[in-house]
Length: 182
Image (cartoon, rainbow, N blue to C red; front, side, top):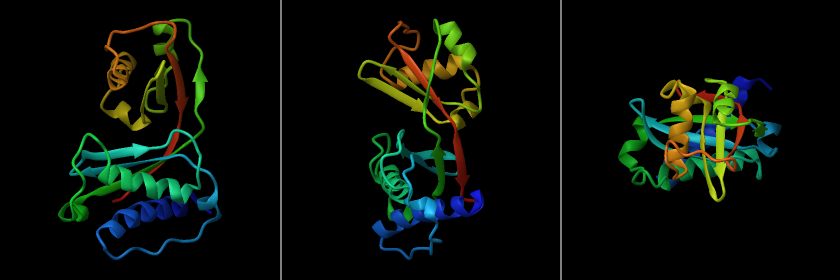
């Protein structure tokens, strides 16, 4: 199995999951053994390069094919930042699937040390403080290339002030393999 074959299968599964909701024709998907293994994914929907929905799983807790299908449906119809995807929008919506590696804790002494340990363009980051948690995929570095800016926006996403810091914040990193429709 090549990563290209896996990527094609994941993109088809994501698009098919949404297509079924609109009672549209679905694409055939190659039966790959990896699709039955646990996997954590994010499905991102864009229109003309603009975000239209993004939902995912941070931990592998169900078969990869199921995770992608469920996250595609959630990105299309349940992302609270957007109204549900309309049937007339479907054809102009591009799908991207990110397959996450398991998250690993980042050890640091303070915020400056945490910022210095980040790998822009490589790391997806999970920020946790008590019950608050947020994440950015590595792709977000394209629009927030500076670690200080990246973490400030991640804090805001978690419902914390951009300049907030205390010793109870934890960070974890993950990487992704991603595939996007042409």
